[in-house]
Image (cartoon, rainbow, N blue to C red; front, side):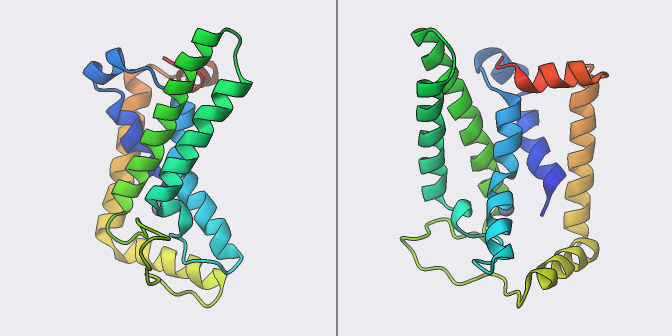
Length: 179
Ligand SMILES: [Zn+2]
């Protein structure tokens, strides 16, 4: 559970001028996708399925969800055909980057090839509250986790200052525009 680090890393990649100038991405999509594997798998865990890193921490989920996002975007949104295609690629790319980097940061303890390769649960929680207690204990007893979250916070602050996101309007523009 490293929210800040998971959000910061894919966002900072697109602050690199070379990539920023060449690739069109939607940062809101990146942000949502960067947290999605944890959100989905923690909901599963809440219902007693998996161990918090389950089906959406797999390559199969990555492929299917990116395809779905691309097709939904292509079919439903925007007006002109060329705009549709262009925007669908940007949204699908943003979604891919968000999830792909999430999986990279969670390696090696994720069921990457589920369901093709049988995986043993990495964690065992008798009930959901036990999972929360275990995450909190792990967080405060593991200096690596604490330092990566602090690093995540610093990176996010850098992005805010670098892009002068000093008002809710500016923040919204930064995230919502595909640029
Ligand atoms: Zn995760």
